[in-house]
Image (cartoon, rainbow, N blue to C red; front, side, top):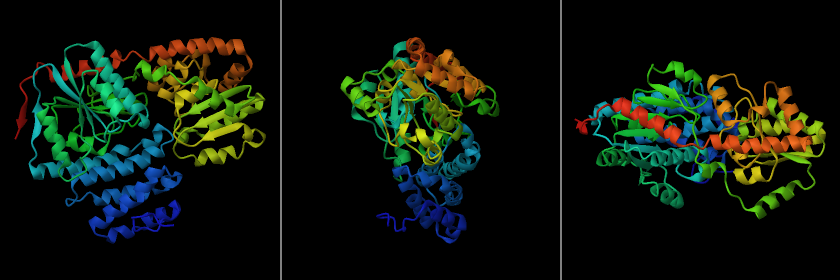
Length: 492
């Protein structure tokens, strides 16, 4: 069939991958290459098509070829976002993201630096006096997009609760914002700017003018997106900070300081000394101990009628590695009458292939390969089985907030180990896959054990809700880096 409006006969991903690999696009004019990249990548992202993994090598080379002097940075940022999103959709663990900085970020960053020099763009290098005016730059200002905006909300709430007088708060929403979310954030004393027109030719200049008008001293980017890369590489604020939430490789001269998430161990040593630190992101209590409709819970539980115990996973399905799935198969085999529920989006091909090996227990697996209401499903099930080797974040906290034990596999990497120590119940932490299976089996067949771990889960969840911890760490870095503060100036 045809994909309407693209001019491309929509073929299987393997066919498109072969066409990209052929390099026929090398003979095309720049405009045609840009259009082809948009038309190939866009539909795969919108539909979360599982075949997009095959396109990554060819799309990466095509993307790099477009970054010529004739390409406007707004177009470069948009193409970067397309390739970045497909890579993220298909990342089963943090190792799949290695090399992203050199292969994807640096070509755009270098292109932007050349463009800024040619255009003689002003660079904002001097901060004003305290309180410092800080702008969270968010490409994810809708609750439907998952954990990132919940972290930003939580940071803003943390600043508001600290009421330190050290900062004034702004949120720049670069892809629009939910109306109710905007009202809630503004109630914290935050000034919200909607800057979703940046893809237009003058859009980036408009964002920079707004930053200047607001006299922003600090930009904090919640994701390594294209617009953030352009703003950072054109020095749009005296201090530019990256808040890593799962995509640690984002180099470039414009990043002054990085707060690395739990999977940023490698970057901790790769980045210059004094330019980064690790942080365990906290979530406001409203996102952890959520209120759900009892009737909706009962309706979902009815899907598992007669089940002795329902195990649950909610998250990106690409994270469900074969070794994890085979462990769940063994759990189902050991405990008759149990059910496994799997819900989430992303590439589920490996999941489907592995489920084909489940044999007599396959009928006891329920899969919702779509965006699901995580807290609702956690209340409707009994025990959360965290993925490995790439484990969950907010979903695990929400499960514990619902009083559900989270069985998880210990991770020796320092960042992961610290997060597990802070935000997981050690009594359901396994050291081997065999131990993981045994813990899950014990919870399913021993009601008293499950009740004890359920009670403990709620206490663990509360430890992850002190949002002032992250806000204080961020403010400390800002004050330390900006020093006494001088009057804002624009370097011409």
